[in-house]
Image (cartoon, rainbow, N blue to C red; front, side, top):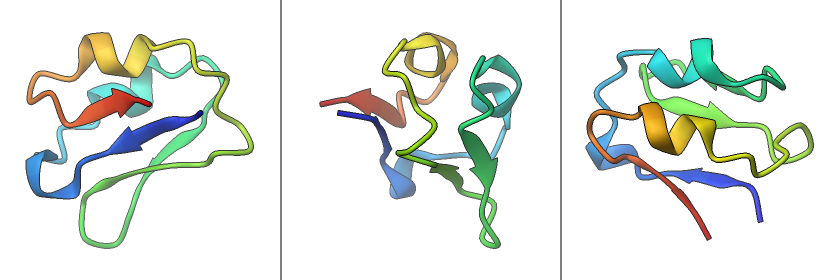
Amino acid sequence: MPAKVIAEDCTGCELCVDECPEEAITMGDDDIAVVDADKCNDCGDCVEVCASDAIVLE
């Protein structure tokens, strides 16, 4: 399962965008991180770097 962003917890800091080795995370129009499930390899790097715990692996 790809990483999932909890929108109400995302602060828009973009740390996950910089950390993702697959470039699977972008920022949406509302400054909330968006994960491209087709690119995500479930590595968890984004989960570890997220200061607001807004990204989870299911």
